Image (cartoon, rainbow, N blue to C red):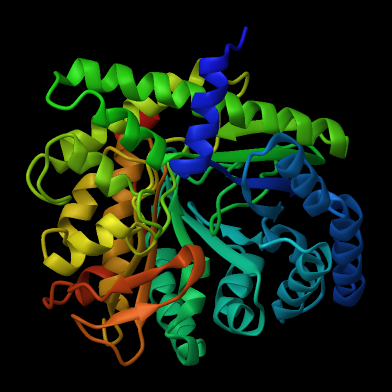
Length: 452
């Protein structure tokens, strides 16, 4: 039973500590839209999305108003488009992206994810066509997000796809040069991608999912930071317990919103994603949580251990609070979207190598990191390969979302606005990885993938 103290505490979390529902995402299967005629397929895609998600935004706004809980984003994820477009007799996949963008605008959502391909073991012709179309697709659309899964613990790492994605990221930056390469902020390269992730830019509706589903992503870095201020100087087991209890409370709110949205939209409830997703706002930073544990600046020695504790405690607290936890669920470290990490990067304490180490113990990976515009494609591919190796060997999802900023160099800043924030351009190693990437082929799956 809720008491007055619980109610007032929740109001304080929302009003002063940046607690929110980061996204309600409706996943929609588009497999029924496959058609040999690409125009008919695009028409089917538009019609199905707008029919299923017609009331998504209004429902989110109604729940937000009635419950007093901020719901920042309303989004859509769809079946990886390479699977749908592959049935059409065309080599031009950009119209499929345009159909997604048109549907997203009609529904009024913030983003639509699923312009995606799953190529961890090899590429079909459809996969390759979609991947090669990504730069143009993201340049010609506003709300479409794209992702490519290049590796998995079970399959290993497709190094041909890794090499290709380095070039695609560079081409996407060039195609959106007028906006500081903004298209790259909507493009993620995964290892071990999950099918029920509600967060952009990597969301897609997996083939193992239902016809449609509601997934909710919660977020509360500010709440966790505030809770840790009450246990300053106490042992780490007290810190972990405090984070667990806080994550439980945050996730209960997400479960409530997810079930209510599911009921009102007559759509099955999928999962609650527990991820602590920061924003550029002061007081909504994962970096500041780590610093509250005793680090002078995020990125200094001890940061990886602090992040490991945080990530584990968030998961342990959340799984007790929801009937179905999924997605990525942990702590995100997107540099441009976290004011504490922006500050640490500008100071020079937080570097690319330290971020890579941190991804061994947190959710996702190297996220929203600006690098010099003249960074070679092979270097970007090598960064992707390193991150995919971490995911493959550790049986976890990892990802890379790099922003090679056209015309910018180390020390410059790119401004994206809104939740995307601003990113200081960070240095990469100047030594070449070109011969390594040129080998191609596949890095085999690790021994512990043999579990059958």
